[in-house]
Image 1 (cartoon, helix red, strand yellow):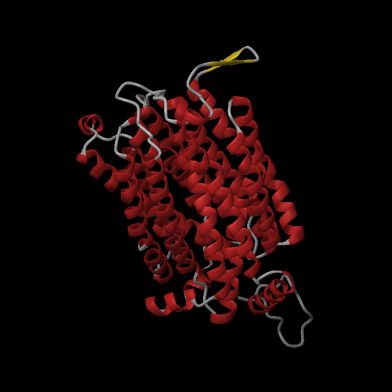
Image 2 (cartoon, one colour):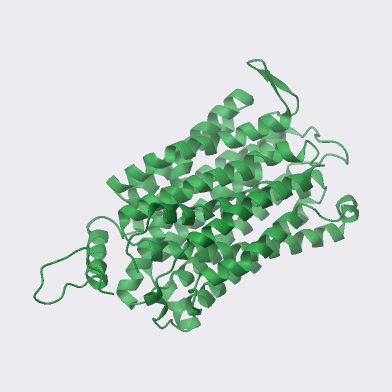
Length: 476
């Protein structure tokens, strides 16, 4: 089994980020807006369902990781799970946007139950696919430089997926989301192409499949007993809260805080309200895609921990600009500036977790990517719980009212607009600062990390007695 891979296989594997990024960001950005603002469900009821689903699905992640670590097939541990979950995931993603017409018009308990079932099933399937796809990464790529390069490719594809999943739905679905079936079909087709491509590109190391995995409860205890992993969990929980709050609030923010409700002519080009929203959402991710190579270079120079802390503090400062933005120009400027630190937040957490998994291998002699990514999935679901409860409570208590059927905009009281601004700017900025402070306790960096990498390199590529050191020799 090669220790490095040809460039085309690296890119094929990395392209899976477009599938996971497109489906997940479209889901977290627009599903609450669709069911609350367009289909008229009570925001408190939707927020409660969102919190319940976050708790329920958090239990699936460590189990999925445990099953993946214990899977033994001729095709590997991870790839069979990816293949089995991809098509059902795409089918549920399409159905999520298209409740039966009678339910969609009812605004009643039936629609709420459909919403609950759809989001729970979608997240279960997405977690299985994404967990196993992500778990392949530290196994396929063991060198820090190669990880940084491939991770930059992964998140370049992710940002394209984010651009499609966040930027296109308002234009494809229409002002009242009456064309959401066409929107869902388009996004599902794109996700399918790159999901199949990443299945073709992913590879596993068969020698790691032969190592015996720990029993579930022993694996759970060993994983939570890892100090650097506990720090990582706290940091990533806060980062995911930032992303979730920004994604879910953005459609409300552009319409009610920035006033994207009338066509606007800029440089002779007339933009509809949905095109303005798409431009706002796309601006951050276009800048992030351009900034991704810069973060890859910066990370190689200063290390993952310092780079992530820098991205967190920069994002906190830029997020405050969204509080003051009041129209298309200032909103677009703030969104574009947010793209610079956003690129770092998107690409760096997986690098830290890959180092944690390497440290665990040194301590235990096992590769347990599935359990680590599963526990990470469990904990970050708490961000869904917090975001759903906070958002539902703030919208309801501030006097927010969904537009009546057939109407795309309803004026909101000043308190509701302030609540939306707080959810878009103040709360995410506070979470980013808290994550940067917590990251100080993460010790796997600098000389400690270099020593770990050298020790693992010696374990993976032992030099036979009597022969000179040969770094490129693979004796596994």
